[in-house]
Image (cartoon, rainbow, N blue to C red; front, side):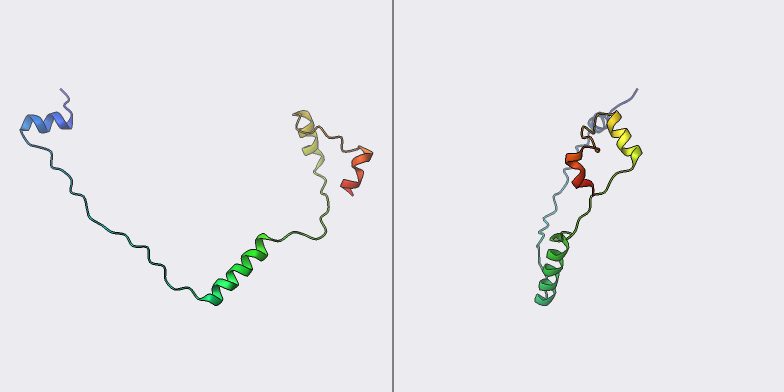
Length: 89
């Protein structure tokens, strides 16, 4: 015979003890920041995320990628189209 935990406790006549809640107060304290470091970090982040290359060149994917994309209907553009030739220089 298999009894659950509640049935065993009730059968023995004991009451389940209530769990006491801990009264914990969490404070968010920010240490003072060096203003020079903050300016440097801001400038560095702007430089990294604001970067755009000057002269971008088109990259032609390998032939087996193009073939795979054409077979699966993912590529509906003809790469030999003369109107698009200037994009692949």
